[in-house]
Image (tube, rainbow, N blue to C red; front, side):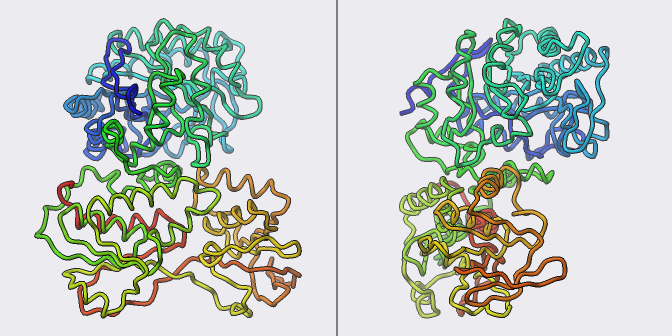
Length: 631
């Protein structure tokens, strides 16, 4: 399966040891002035040690007014050199190459972050903010700033410079007719890019140069696939060693980072068209498995695969894949790795609590103990695996017939097609590590005592919260978890009312509508799933808004329930509406009842029925407590 994936490839002056790239991903692990940190270096080291041939940092700003994140890396001044040099040394020591992607955010830069008014080819507002149009001379100076940044990277020992001309950032803004309305020499869409490439080549002539392009913008009035290809044919590609193909822009973010619902390898057919230029081609876009990567390479669509989120979930993805194993999976949720960026927070991973904490030494291995884990949801599964890897004897009690707890319910949702892969992986890991998993066992004090544990870990999660309003006890009212366990068939004159528009309620409304139900979604606030980010929300919200069988009521509360009608509140008024059918409650959760035991207990819970992030983050504390040398 991995024959081509593991073969070396010559690119420019380099030979890469295999075809796997750890691509540029913004991580918010840097300092406020753009320098590398120990946390960032450890993250890069882990992916290099995990087998990737080329490890990139992230979109790295070339000038201070082009910064987009609070802790984004910079190549804008000489004070960043020491950190870049350290990163290069560490990555090289693991047998990989280091790459830096040079970027300027242009019109999408946030002045609250950068401290500067955004600059752009033209005054085209972004999210209500208007940039200042660059003068002709200023555009030329900014092209030179890319060259200076390249010089710094080369001096630090960086092997590959990638020029970011995609995703709606500054260079892409010059390329697109949607954002370039100029009448000077930069009216030619490739002129600015050509000057930047020339400046980089002059400043770092011995450094391999990648060019990252969006195959299409994905928005009306933007560049489509044919137009982008035609522009590429006019670019000075003699200065470029490889083409890196992505897609989208900020107004079409689902193409920049695809949801788990998207087809695996979705951008490969677009990348294949760039083979005509005679350059090695790399492609990103939903490459979670070795089989997907190998299929892309075997088809001839690309020479390299940019495996971002899957290596974020498992830094050893490359080594494990090349050896025929199964890495810890990325489930395409876009929560910790993408949507946290919109909150200006450091990124993390739903499926791997160690991600982003590679700089924290694992605790020293303790004497083997007998560990009892009560509950086989995500937190319990991670605690059991970590304890077993550290050499402890682990028994797991699960009241249900299957492992996974409430996360297994999430895996049933329309928008979560990759979630079941994580449960399959944990199942295999528990078998490999010899964990004694006992299903359909209620953990009372007698049962727990019979295992003679030294430590008991309660990972029993929470129970749905049901607010007390008139009629809350009626048979038609059910918790969101009960709905997911046994969803009824659609009935012509019935409506599924979802009471609560958090990420769970919204996802269940989407699943119900997809199954053919008429849906009424009640949202007390002004927006759906406010705790979820735009990448997670995007496809689900579009389906809900576009489905005529779905009624969305914002600023609306549920005040009472009767058998055939609901009392709804809005703007200080209440009125009855005739609505038959189940009322599904999605109002968060509360801790479950305590389990009596004479032993010391460490409690882990799940705050939301299908919120994988909270489960695994709480499980992280246990993972660190038990983790020793890998088994």
